[in-house]
Length: 302
Image (tube, rainbow, N blue to C red):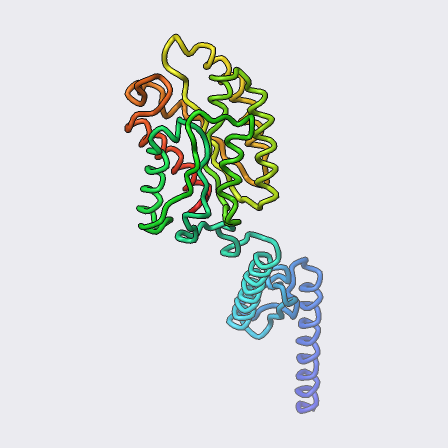
């Protein structure tokens, strides 16, 4: 009997423990916070949200260390995916790095002297000092061989109208090599004829000829203010012509035209002229340097 009672007591004890275990499981299910794969043995609870990376939900339940390892692995996967996404974004239209650069890098030493024409009247031709200063700068910059020269066809007393300055261009272009033109024009049209509109019409026709000849770029440098009361009518004509000629130049695309107003260069420098119009040696150097800066900034005859 004693053996039977002992046996029964053992069975009841086992049944009781099973009941307690079942009740405990029920409480865990109803408690609100659960792990995806059961409670962690160390008493901590890893939520499915915390253990979820880009690769899905990490399953804990193999011990605290295992759960931590799974979360770390998932975080690493998430970080890796983020890095991949950033790289993909960068490659497919996000922030672009190292794919552009300057699209029109200027290369020096590609221009020969017979590819550059200088045309105009006595502002250039009186001493040709402006052309000489530009050539000096070009040689120092490695843009013109030391023994080479530009084609300077400028002639004193000439006008844009009556086909005088335009004929200087055509003569230079006979070799079929002209790519760049450095010019003034309109001063004598105003001084001798008082005809700024005639100069403007002639310039339009000249630029059309240059386009047909595939001239690439023009630098048009326009006069400083004349000095002296005897040039009031000349100044008035130039003031009227200047914005019109600038608008024409700025609007060209073939050839591309770069406008240079010499007034800021000359203002305050009466030593740049002796007669109120034509440049002295100092005026020629200052003008040549100003023209060269425009050439350098816009890759003209470099």
